[in-house]
Image (cartoon, rainbow, N blue to C red; front, top):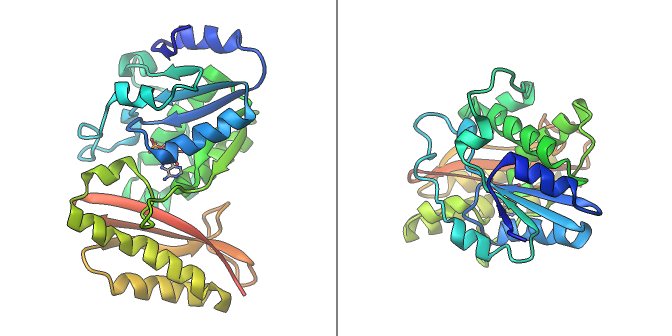
Length: 275
Ligand code: AMP
C-alpha cells in the first residue's frame, strides 16, 4: 500500500483500519538520526508507525525561518522505509483556514523559548492536538532535545485528557557532542565549531552539579561567558517536568540553554543530578 498520505481523510481511514497499537512521530522533515531514534522507539513498541512531516506555519513568527526551513520529502521518505504511514499534508489541507479555536499553552509557555518566541508553543500545541486527534495513537514520541515542548505536550495531554502516552526519547548527538538538529544545516564550519560551546557548558554544569543547583548554574554561566561566537539567550537550571525553578532540596534538574550562533538559534539541554 502507498506509504505517503497527503489528506486527513485518507490518514483517518488508514489508521482506523490498522490493527494493534499505533505509534506517532511528528516531525518537520529534514530528517536526521535524532528523528530516526524516535521512529526506532515507535517501531520497537507499536504495530503501526505513523510519521508526520509538516513544517507548521503557526509555530513560526514573522521574520523566523519558515521559508528557509529545509524541505526534502524524497530524502525523508528514503529514511522511513520501515514506517507504515507518512502523513505530509499541504497547509491548505492541514488548516483550511486560520483556526478560530486555539489552545492556550499557559504560563510555562511564556518562559525560556516562549519569551523569545511568544507565539511558538501555541502553534506547536495546535498542530500536535490536531494530529493526535486525527491519528489517535496509543503512544506519541517526542525528543528530549525540545524539552520545553515535551513538557508542554505532556501537560496538554494530561489537562485535556487526551488519552495518549507521551514518550520522551533521549537526545541524539553528533560524534563531537553537538545535538543533531535540522537547523545545524545553516551553520558555517566556523559557526559549527563555536556551537560546541552549548554542549560544553551543559557538560560542565552536569559535572559541577554534585555541589548543588547553584554550583551547576555557576558552571553553566561561566562556561558560556568564556565562549566565543555565541550570543546566549538563556542558560539556567529548571525542573524538567514543570520548567519552573528547582527547589533547594531537588535531587535532579535540567540544564537548558539557547543561543544564537551567527544567524542560527540553537537549543540544547542536559539532565543534572545534585549531590
Ligand atoms: P522537528 O522536526 O525539529 O520538529 O523535530 C521532530 C521531533 O524530533 C521532536 O520531537 C524533536 O524533539 C525530535 N528531535 C529533533 N532532534 C532530535 C535529537 N537530536 N535527538 C532526539 N530527538 C530529536
